[in-house]
Length: 250
Image (cartoon, rainbow, N blue to C red):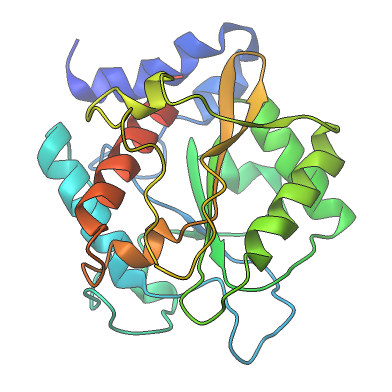
């Protein structure tokens, strides 16, 4: 089995009961020349002057460039951005941007990314779509961007929302011996890196659907560390690669 077949069949094998829904989440449907895209979720943040969903698109570029190199697959790199430039991206700086307004576009992607600094709420419709996406086999990495704030506001909003949508106790601390910490890189001794020094490390939290982690929730700003400005940048990229590989194979 080559890597393109692995990416296509891994998700289906992990969710055989999904039928066509699992196939619809294949990363190859969006653009067959790429093995992996990294869609960023656009959503409404409470503080629209400083707290946004599109912070540092160059971070994503650094991560998926390294992912493509390590895993030896074809990734679609975001263009016209690097490290911390620009601070706020537009759609041209991301390889894919999605919303939680409709389920059909999300079925093109097995993996989504959400980040912001402050508190947020989702509409009833957005919560329904998020729940459907997760139950159809999708995966979301939620990472608190704390560069401009000392509080873990995005993390707390995400935790509260996930517990509301999926039930109290659905979000749990991921044991360091879990394979998400040890599939490409062995990070069992590290766990979740503290990417920004003034952040709060709650450990990697997971929304579990059965035995599958469907959401990885981080409070430590892995995203900003991908710029290379933080000493924990290499560890944060390694964990990012582990998370992507887990998402694509379960």
